[in-house]
Image 1: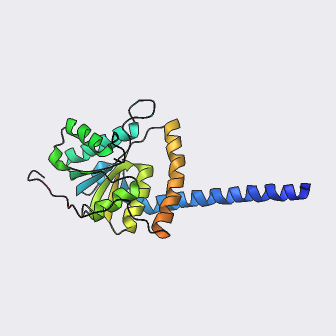
Image 2: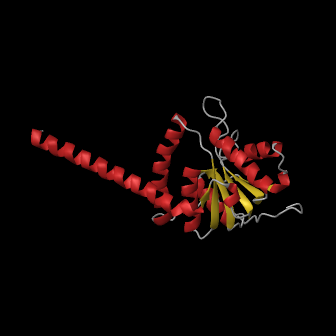
Image 3: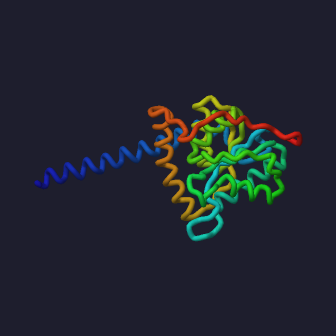
Length: 221
């Protein structure tokens, strides 16, 4: 390989890396701009909705410590319920393994916080954000709801729901700072690229669908 050829390869590699980075940043920022009008950190600014969709995540980190992302989502759900901003909680998460059950874990913690089980519906097919959003519509027959998760996650959830003509808003709960947050944001950058592909190119649907199971409200709700 000649020096000239090597220089061309290096130049091409650098150019491609810069172009790819610009594309990633552009997609990330575009999704944020689309979602911003529907995201709120102040619960008082939320329009009351019958259903709040809590997006699942692991309760514990790999080191055994409580996952702050999980903790803040549970606290946010309790707050909105107590304030009357939502009447019923749809708990959507991963139950793809026998010994791993995000919806039931959330339900147990919410019951301990004083929310009755009758005010909760569990969605075991929420393997990822797109599945949780579309199953809320297709399985649980909910077209208007409040999403509860961190701000960066709200962006993608709002993009998905609005693309599918759902009337949604998102309550952005706090997020931890530091190394764990940085890792999550790096993953989110790639997740947004995949979301755009799923929505506008592949027209992706949830992995698990089935017969409709409309959410029914108890007399207290």
